[in-house]
Length: 72
Image (cartoon, rainbow, N blue to C red; front, side):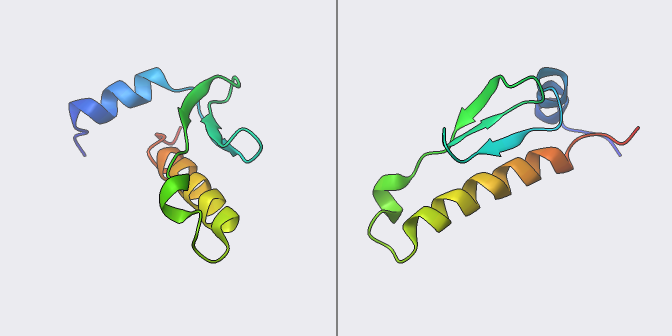
């Protein structure tokens, strides 16, 4: 399988595994360094279970990034 250049760059940048930090609402790498902030509160703040939705987004993003990690 040939990886797109952007995916190769991502894999060379991140220390895996990444995880979602519910308190900081951010995704961090294996060394605790910030990968990205999880945003979107303006859209979901008035929806049912807004906090659960926000956390679900963070956990799914982290899982998707981790799914790109090459197996050793």
